[in-house]
Length: 133
Image (cartoon, rainbow, N blue to C red; front, side, top):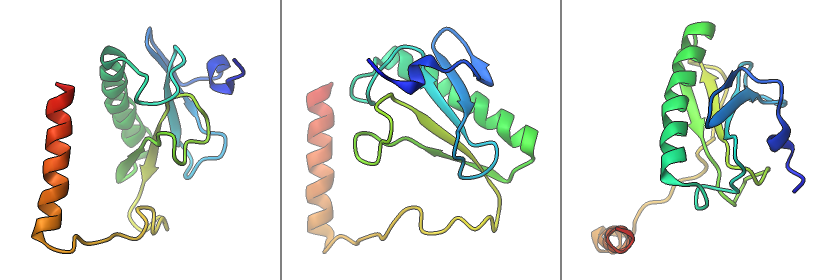
């Protein structure tokens, strides 16, 4: 497999489960990528135990970024399949500041036509959750 994330050796953090490194094309300076050490393509492939560790490390790295850079907040993003540029599960941990110029990141939003349509989607999701459990 030819995965450029699987061979990262210039990192800011590593443990038994994951490694974090600076993004080569950061949205803002300090932008980190956190990946599992073992290769998983996306969230649908990754075991829950590894995902839990990544979540814990996301909080650790977010806190470290906030303290190191004195930024106002953190943006955490994870693309899966759509807009995923590298097929190795990764989490973007991005320092943010008020008035930093980032706009329109969440794309145009839509409204539900009415409460019936909203209930339809709610019930479909609840049913899928129950089927997974």
